[in-house]
Length: 134
Image (tube, rainbow, N blue to C red):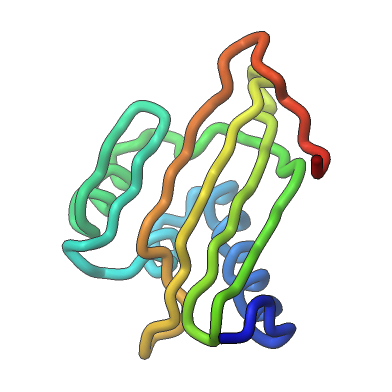
């Protein structure tokens, strides 16, 4: 298995960047398209646990105004072979300054790269918020 094949990393980086742009634009169709349309898809958010694509899509439609604006601080992507990758993002919410984390498991499907699992969380005030490698 090849870890961090440059071609795969480029493809997944493009997918992660497109997801971020769609998130900030509240482009619901693009956000839905980024997720694997499967009952096995999971998205655990700051205030919600969504099991299956149908719950994720319903959440997006019901979230007035979309995601709060944020600034990405760091993005780390690791690919494993040609069909699996993990993306981790640290971000700062523009409204509150809170630091958040997002992890996504990306899989290659017949329809391109899709998120199969995602987790979003905010750090507690006073928590160690270092972003540099240790």
